[in-house]
Amino acid sequence: MSSAGDAAVGYPISYVADLFSRTRRESREVMVGELGFGGSHPMRVQSMITSDTMDTEACVKETLRLVEVGCEMVRITAPTVKDAANLKQIRARLNDAGCRVPLVADIHFKPEAALEAVQWVEKVRINPGNFADSKKFNIRDYSDMQYAAELERIRDRFAPLVMRCQERGVALRIGTNHGSLSDRIMNRFGDSPLGMVESALEFVRIARDLDFHRMIFSMKASNPKVMIAAYRLLVARLNAEGADWNYPIHLGVTEAGDGEDGRIKSAIGIGSLLSDGIGDTIRVSLTEDSEHEIPVARALVASFSRKRSASSSVSGVAPTWPLFDYSRRSSNRIILEGITQRIALGGMETVAVVVPRRVDDAVAHKREGLGDYQPELILEDLSIVEVDPLSTKELEAVNAVTEARLVTVRDGLELDPIAAFRLLAARIDARHPILIKDTLATLGDTLNPVLGGEFLDHLLTSSRVLGSLLCDGIGDAVLLRSEEAPSQSLRLVYNILQASGVRIFKTDYVACPSCGRTLFNLQETTARIKSSTSHLKGVRIAVMGCIVNGPGEMADADFGYVGGAPGKVNLYVGKTAVKFNIPEGEAVERLVDLIKEHGRWVELA
Image (cartoon, rainbow, N blue to C red):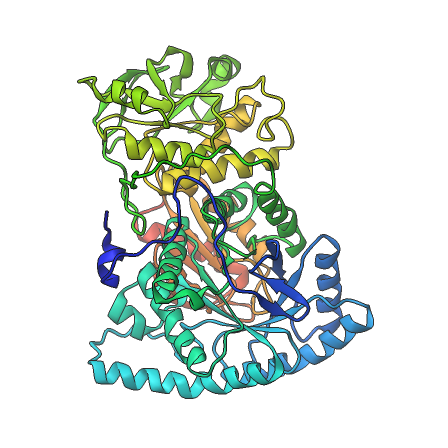
């Protein structure tokens, strides 16, 4: 099996020992202050404060609130040397309060700020895309000699920080963001997961040349498919480089947004990789108060400490889907009788929503009021072939049938659903469409932690399982059963389809979490923008507090609202700024005008 990612690298690569049985990736221990990452240490949970770095009192209070709810490491932005210098005061005040939580200085454009910050914190995060570069979206062909000269320029900028970190025992996070790849990387590798990985490796090679190894990696994107592919490719590249490249991994979906959508998107990206055994620390990025991120992160981590399912490993089985590039599994098209109309399933048809009869009965009287959250197929009315993906005999029986059949994994098997459906996709003939399920437990199985419990647990579990499979390209129909409330279960399954990028039925928002760089109130602004635009189906709007990741992370967005200066907003079409320095008070109205100018506006019915 190969993919574009494989071909670009030029040699066979693997990111996981066994796709069908989870084993945590072995990584070296990296100490950040007194806190250990990787090795035999547990998964660590971290966050980032939103306070202005120059407001010492606010930073200390917010950090203490985070620690109180279980945050183990706190990141603070340091956009200038002055901000970086104030980290001394913040660290001292926390020490006085008896708080030794490790602090991370978040650095983007100024190496000088990093050199100041390293004196006061336990870890420095740098973004390879803008640490030594300014993004201009220039198109240029670099010769090998010119490219080598660029790398020498980067070395001159980066090496002093590495040596200072070495002297002080400070760790580094090499944190690539999809939205801020340098022009150099963009021109050679494209706006791609491969470009994200190569951007980080350029900096790591410099650090390793200086015998520095106290490093942690991250590959963040707002699109879960891009994020998953980048982390997989990163781990594969590290494996290929050698056993001593086993650095810990920090997981996160950047600009995930708020509410259910932000939690779903985070669970898909982070949960998918945790299911593969990848990850040593996580940060859930929500456009909310920072302490709201911690319960979500802790719940995601806790789901992997529960009783393990039986092994689904089978020798000689290879994936039939690309590991580093999204591609929908190809199956034959079949026609099924739906609730209100006939439904085409399989092939490149829209992924359909299946519900138990009890759900349809519960919502039938208010079907018109459900809008797009409609049940489409009733489980009990479907002719489904249920199989044990470990049973060669059962699979051979299905594959012997001439016509395409809707196939699923049988309930009651003690298998992890992700592994079970991957195994089914690998062993069943491609012509058969697959119904994926978020749990293999039945409603009567009270011992299964997926059933019962809180809505957040249902949301995270269903998002992780269904979203991971959909991002693998597996699934022609989906059945969500972890949440029993009919209307909530329908809303949840449709939002998972949207966050996975396989069925767009509402406005899609990319909203960054607030931080000390933010130039307006992100929560209030995002709410105002949603109030004005949430009826625009299929339109993608990015809301970014500053320019750090703005233009790049908005590459997939139709329109962008970006803080350009205090009280001023720049508006974008795609990644091109078209309106500048708009007063914040009128910026939402001007955004609506911009959407109208480009023919994407519709009036509310």
